[in-house]
Image (tube, rainbow, N blue to C red; front, side, top):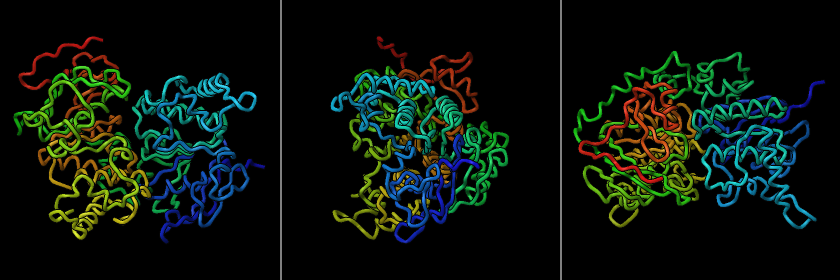
Length: 548
C-alpha cells in the first residue's frame, strides 16, 4: 500500500466578500517530491498557502498531512504536523543573531528555566551543515543579504521539524548564483525525503527543480503535469490561457521561455543610444560615498552618468552598494560627493525634495517603503500626490477625481481584485507590486529620473510585461531610468547598457549581449579582458580611491 501524501488539499474553497479566491482545488505532494505551483498574480497561490498552513480557514474542503486531517484555521497544528512556510517577506528579527532567530519562541532550556545557548547554537549550526546551507550562526540578521536571510528562514523551518516546506517565490530577490544554490538545496531536501512546494513565476527554474507542476488560473486548478511531459511554452499557455505574441517575447527576455525564442538583444540595445538625442547626461554622480546600515562604507567613491531617454541596468551580487545607491538617489540616505540632476544639486537632500525634483522610486521593500497596508487601494494610489489634481481640488480632497484615477490605474495595471476600496494589505504580493508600479509610473507627471529596485519581484508574466512597458514609456518620454535587479535576464531585456557594482564601486560596464561569465566576473570585481569600463561624464576627473 502506497504511503499517504505528505500534504493534501481536498476540494478547497475559500471566498472573500463572496468571491472565490480558490474554487474547488484538490492538490497533493508526496514525500520526497518537489511540486511546483505556478499561476498569475491573483490566481489563488497565496490563498492556497494560507489555507495549507492554517492561517486561513477554508470555507469548504480539508487539509491533510501524512494522512491525518488538520484542524482548519490552526497554524500551530500545521507546524506540529511538519508544515513550514518561507514567505516572500522574511519573518526575521534584525537585531538578533541567526541562531537566536531560528530558536525564537522554541528555545531549548536548561533546568527548565534558562535558555541553553550553547545547545541552541550547536543545533542550528548542525541543521545548516546537514543541508549545505551556509550561514554564520552568530551573525546578526540585519548584517546579512537577502540570500543569506532566506537560508536562515529555511534552516529555521528545518530545525523546527518541517517535513513539508512551502517556498513562496524563493528566487524573486536572489542573484543567479544564489538561485542555483537554492535549486541544489531543494533537490537535497527531496533526496532526504522531505517534500517541497515551490511557488514561482520563473518557468525555467520550475522545470529545473520540480518533479511535477500544478497550474492555477483564476482560483481553479487547470493542470497538474510531470516535468518530463511539459515545456516552458506549454506551461505559459496554461498559466495565461493563451500566450499573446508580445508577452511571449517579453517572457523570453525575462528567462521564462526557451532561449531559442529569445528577443533580439542587439536590437533591444540599439533602441536607445545614450547621448544621441540628449547630449548632456541627465544624472551625474561623482565620487559618491555613504555608510551602510551597520556604519561601514557602502559606497566608496562611485561615479556614474546616465542620459535622458535611456535605461541603465545596475547589476551586482546583493550587498555591494545597490540598495544604498538607490536610497541616495531618492533622498533616503545621507552621502558625500556630487549628485546632479539636469545640472542641479541639492535635490536629493530628502525624499520630499527628490520627488519634487521629478524622481520616482519603486523600492525593494514595498511594505516598508511604498505602501500603507491598512489604507485602501485608492488611498495608496494617491500617496505623495494627495495635494495635486486629480486627487485634490485646492485644499480639499477631490474624492470623485481620486476614485476615477484609481479605477484607471487599477485597470491599466490589472490590479486584482479591481476594487479601489480593497485594503492594500489584503492584496497578494504581486498585486501590491502592481499597485506601487501604477502609482509611481503612471500616477502623476512624467518623471525626470526613475529608480526601480527589483521592479518585477513576485510578478507574473503579464504583470511583468506591463511594468517593463511602463519603464520603457518613461524612457521614451525622456526620463533617465535606473533598474537595479538581481535578475540578469531582466536587465538584458530592458537596458541599453549594464553597469556592475562591486564593493561600493563601479567595476565595469557591458552591453546587454554580454555573457553570464563576463558579467559574473565583473560582479566579483574581476573585469574581463576587453570589457569597457563604466564611462564617466564629460569633464569628470579621475576619482581618488578611498582608504580601506
